[in-house]
Image (cartoon, rainbow, N blue to C red):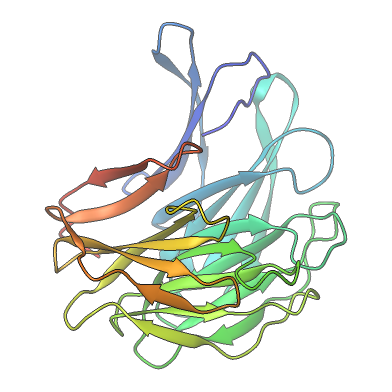
Length: 268
């Protein structure tokens, strides 16, 4: 969600997996939306994110094409239209599943961080600011980890961005501490409990200590867990996870309110 046409209304871009396209829906003041256009993608688009990757002050769209093993970038143009696709390879049988967008190496350019769920890795594409990217750097999340969600934040107060990943297959989350140049230390893992199958992560300061905490959606345990940040790259698990039915994704507002989307999702 973002404002694609600068009318101060929130617009939506959505991945239509069965139709192999993304749709842009423009928002109106009354809370309604109209479909502006659809744009072709690769096979099975699963996740979308937005950012200005070529520094033209227009938002661009990135989409994870799960069955193609790549990321598609669709660049914003005039009148809220998009054109000029670019393709970033994540690898054969990688199945990219989620993104984070951030500047990892302090060059003022947007980078793409992607979870490659079947190749059990986190990929980093460093942007050049002209719509092109360096080849993917990969960081292992462990065999059979099946990473499904990623967020970035500075968890140890060194002014470098770090990565947190939900490892659906390992019942754990992984923390990768950043070096500030687009590379990361080996992962440190925190258990989310046996048969929890964490599906989504988000970050916020939940206890007003000015330190980032992690909230994780434990899909098969029907609960969410909160890990309280200690400011040095370590976390403490809260003793009582919050029960909720079939939690799939988590969103956190600026007011530190956790919003949950409860979706029955039979095909993971």
